Amino acid sequence: MISATLKGLALSAALALTGAGAQAQEAAGKKIGIAAREITNDYNRDIIAGAEKVLKEAGAEVVVTDGGSDPRKHNENIESLINSGVAGIVIQLGDAQQLAPVVAKAAAAGIPVVTTSIGSKTEGVLADVGGDDALMSAMVSRALLSSIGYKGDVYVFWVPGAPILETRKRILQAMVADYPQVKLHEVPTEHNAARVQAQMEDILTANPEPGSIAAVWGAYDLLVSGAVEAVRRNERNEIKIGSIDGDRVGFQMLLDEESPFVATVVQDVPRIGSLAAEILLKGMGGETEFPSTLFTDAWLATRANGVASAEKRWGSGIWEEMSIPREDVEGRWEQNGDLIVVHPILP
Image 1: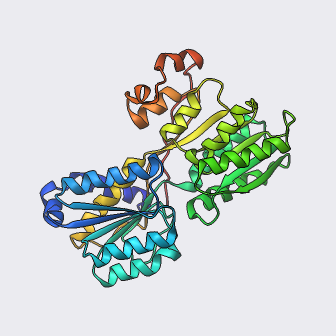
Image 2: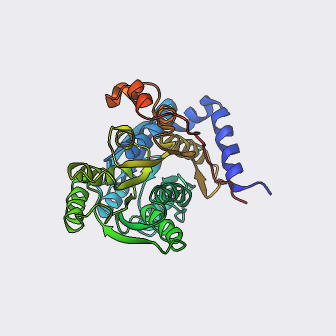
Image 3: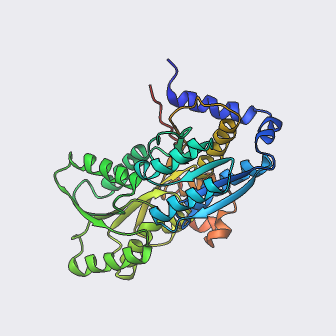
């Protein structure tokens, strides 16, 4: 039996080869909504950009809403899109249970919906598209634990109730169960780097001795950037820090001189958006058979493969954007690490 992932890859190729005219016929002149729970980082923005590009090329008018990190506002925005008569909706982030009522309303109105980065398929949607959060968490958790020799106190920053962040934390916890010399300290927080910085300052004050904190694990790059800043300001760069997403801020932290940030898992985020849009267009054309969940590529970025990793995600112009000369990075850290792209294979 062909795996769901291989079906997803085949679907992606088929969608790319489908005549642009057919998609344009379904979308031309129609209004399509993109409902984002929040738009705060490169991850949010690039999913929207990836979807917008495909939809606008198909002739659609695109309306984007921002829930401002408020699940209730997110649902209200989706309801407003439904009531405005959109032809389809891409939903970025949320909880499957929270989204179920508004997805049901969309289905009742005959409006196809695709979700991104929910972590599971919400009843009534065509599919969910995202990164494999369990796989990505295993990758960064392995890198971070290895960097501290599998022993020491690790502080864990995540936002409770955010499904994909809860998944990422659970994988870390499962891995740490095999290493009794590692002690996790959970630090629930908000989608706010300044809040994380203040929390990390308090943790550093309570643990002033070098070695008292081995590492900081962050659920995503922008979130943990506050912890990186606190560690640097307190000159505690013996502490290792890692997270997920491969945002520009992630690469700035990774490749900056004397940064405590040692690893990030990079996602092909624009492809999440573009694949979601392609599925939505097919759904608007009447197709209903899609894999429940589709995943995009990911790879671990470290200082040893930082140049190749950054350019694969952001292109050669990333150095000017970050104001970090490429030659400085190459002179600072030998670029001798492999860049290995991973993609889940499902039976």
